[in-house]
Image (cartoon, rainbow over all chains, first blue to last red):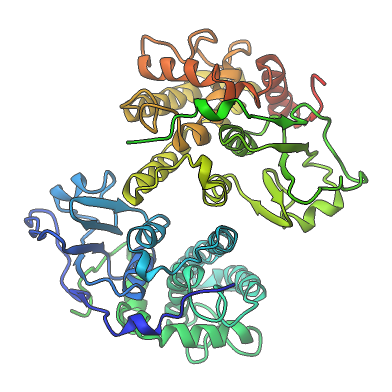
Length: 262
Length: 262
């Protein structure tokens, strides 16, 4: 399956505000100049991270607005009827939902297209990304373990099953083919959340270094290392120690510490 | 929001096999000639109906293979890893999933494009269709009433809420604008299943004639009548009496009578 190599675009990656503090209820709407591109984000949200990675991979110059999505700014409801992240905004156009923003960006910015142009190859990549949402659904299993370590054996078995299916679906270096593409970018954030969980004490028996483990998951382990260390992912991701702490506080106390580490 | 009027395409609608008997385990794979287009369908399945309507609306000449999706033919797993309907096949290419087939068809057959070409208008229609999947999720509420009439008041309230939201989202003659389009075609089958339910005794207080009722839902009622009676929908749909009987037998006894009425 052919994909556009991403290297030539990396040079012009310019996301600003990735580590800005979260805007909340009462804060005014920051003005957005004509022609400027904005992404509404939540630093630890894997769904928002999908859009962040796609924007970065396409080399779109964008201003990141981090949101407190519990105490949301009132004006944000005029952008997103549910007040959720991610959302993108440019030239008065707002597009929401992590499953829709990436393809929209390819349509609106075709010069940095990531999805294949061939209709059949394109839909195969979309279907693969959809199938890989099983990884997203595995993450809450580990929240349950964070709350109650007695559930570890039962819950981690389900995570291992999902990882095994993801290993089986990885038939090239990347899900998109010889270079990372649509299914890789839309799926990575959920693998990353499992990786963050692995750094917490006694939550899941997976290695932090060489995640998820080359013995059982050789292709995935090689894939994860390459995509985690790519300039694209490094430009948007949060450090594992903050990520793990955020998830643990959310799972155990319902606390959403949006500005953790800032 | 601009959409291509569908009338010019209706002349060349040629779906064959819409009312063919369901192929099942043990039945051989019917040969598919080069250049021919096939759709794997289940006559009473709203998800499959989405693809059927889209194929009909695009005027694609297609052979319909109805499937027994309980006792599936073994060879069908080579087409769809879960053995589900809908799936389309042409020139050795198989595309699955009702949420992906329509846009693929627009990409592969751009001369009969239904989604707008403008990236922003296109994604708005896709997001609207996604939002309208709430109608799909309302249908099982009525299965519960078919099993136990004591649940009618509680369950139908949820259906009425969904219909009210759908009414509020209908700001033009059709969800796509002045002509039916992507969100209309992907959503209609679920409204139709609620309509079928309304024809059963004491399941939901909605009129069969003038569904879902012009007093509470004036825009939807006008919309439903127009799209139900369109040549596109009439070319693929099943009679309400068979549809209602199929749903009731499924809800109350788990029976899937694929060849009902044939």
